[in-house]
Image (cartoon, rainbow, N blue to C red; front, side, top):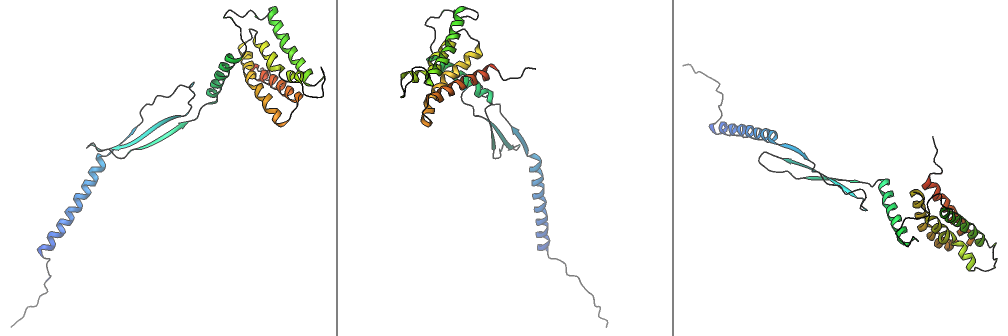
Length: 235
């Protein structure tokens, strides 16, 4: 009697086949969903126009908003990210606003004509020359009084005090009374506000009438050189 021996390979059970098929199908569906969502996603860059404030305003800080968002076809909007940039004020804008404030202040407090008629001290007229000579002569006399050369005194007195303030009280008003050019009028407006600051601040550090008058004179000619362009090179 012959016995037939054979090797038999064990086959997987039906439950194992079913679970492996389900796992492969689940992974395939997940991959397909990821691919579809990636294709449907759109990125957009939105930068709405923002009106900027005029340059002449005193508020110089200006911001521009940049919004970045991501949206999908189903209307779902991703979290937004805002980036703000700040623009620094330009020096020309600062200069214009400072000029406007100085001219307005000087026009309010500085001596001016009592009538609204045209200024008779036109260039070339006798009155124009009188105001000009009066202005520079008062500066010279103020220096003589400040250095105690006229009406000498060993103590601070009214004459030396008047000499210290002579440029602000007599020189600037006399020169402003003329029908001078706009650049010169602007320089005189700056000096009308600057010289009182110098006359009040300098005595805190050094009590000297000649020093204050010298500082006022230096500021006077420096302002004229700046506004009238005395130091600019001509081509």
